[in-house]
Image (tube, rainbow over all chains, first blue to last red; front, side, top):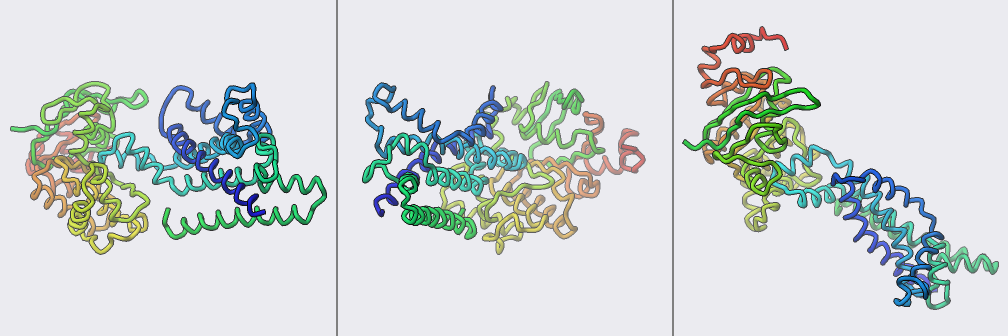
Length: 210
Length: 244
């Protein structure tokens, strides 16, 4: 069981990290830059909030399968493939919430930064810093999506015991085999993990660390 | 004589409405120039064009007799020699210290120098003991003093003040006016101040210009402007007879 918990944290944590590294700059750029098709890109990012995990899993499965473009990597039925599948789900969420957070940073602050000598790159960095609570929320929401997700990791990981079985896929398996007690215990563990992570982040917020 | 700031034939429109109409202005080095005029005359737009926050539709912004192109590299370098303090300053979600240190950090000033300069700037506006407080929790007057310290810590050659004391109590007005005078005296910087408060223009400015309908109608040394205006419009404005 410890191995399942550790793998769940590793897969969800890594995909959230990827989501933050790609999603925060992407969301910031969409929020602050004026470019052709900006509204379309923004709508697309928000649409991906509701992207079905099984569809993401299917797409990543096709890409990683033997005949797929990334089949040579041999990531199918491995944690790396699962991370990729979850990252596909997490990046748009982090980007979307970041867009909302950065957009509400006051226009007056933009002008204040400019008049104090900021160039556009420095302003973008300031805007993210100003919106840091919202950006942290974006990352938290991304982690919530990743740790609780089941469809994509089931398709891409295959739920192989000792290799790709995570908390959510183990719950699905136990439920299908009528091991309700074990499934419930795993469910409680999943809930507790999410609670600890969110409580820690909330504490950082309330202490003014972010 | 060096002319640090000038506008030559500047035009600016918003939504088809002309706000500045072939406006000319020369601000001499080291002077405090007051801009007065009725609401909607374009006073704030003059400052925003000078600070390169607004690109003029026509005409030129000249800094030390060199025409500036907004959004160019040179414009950024020149903007870093100016600072605009707005009527309602926006403060960053950070401490008073970090707010004042912001511009220095942008310029890559080493941390050991930042500390001393920030404390000195805070002392200048009487906020030395508030350095660690969250800037957004200060009163409006104190936030304006933070904005003043945040600007002057950068030692700008040009200070642009936009109704910078209009919402403040008399004590804060006196403090900031005194700080402006002291800063000009110590740094020799040029100051352009937009104000509705004619008494403030009288107290601070060396010269005053009446902006009316997008143009300077009369520009004169402060004493002459108030005591012996040459234009009937200026007389009407000063006596409060001008309806706007």
